[in-house]
Image (tube, rainbow, N blue to C red; front, side, top):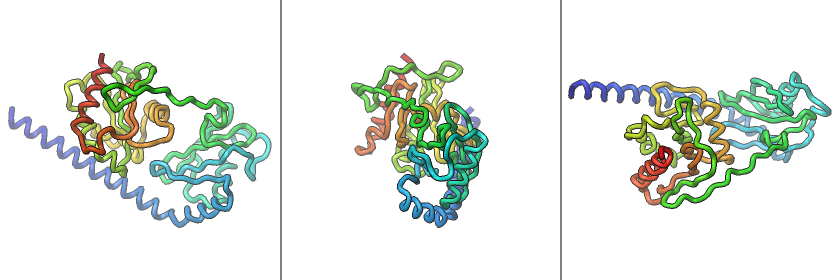
Length: 281
């Protein structure tokens, strides 16, 4: 029995090592691609300075091109689903954007336009009359109000009145959103991931998504996409896109670490256990 246990531990360590090596290669490839296109993107930034209504910014490693709500050169009057995406792509290309590819156009009250930029998903939202906005709310007029939260006594988490979000098996979600390059995320990673070894782990759905490479650190596989449902939670409870972000059952949330300034991982773990046990009632 003891020998079987040692063999199982060795197998898990080997699997973890292989996944780590694959992830390192993914990160390196993305970095190389970014450096390759930096000179072209610098040209775009120069044009941005000359056109203040074009905003270019980096969020979680992906270039997000946003236009303030206004009619921009090249599109006047109403646009159709067939023309909206291509006209916007032509506009970006003419202004120096390199590496953008039109992926899809989804119609709602306006259009949700999805681009591919160096393997990352980039979105723009357009109304039917050719106006652009940075978010769906800005275009549709349906701006989501920030989730109202209250400080939770005895914890670094905040509490809201939302229903507890669960997977299809009824298990509450316990989620961490981070990136591979964030030092605060690296500090908390092993402590959070260790929750998968706790006694309650079979009663909750614990996932840790590194959103820059779209991988769940708690699986053997290397994923390539964060489930849309989980990204909706991330965007809802942290609309500014900060990391790390913790979403425990959608009822309890926290942006950033609670005890990093004291370098106190034990208190972090105790807080995670406290909140998880609250979820389980």
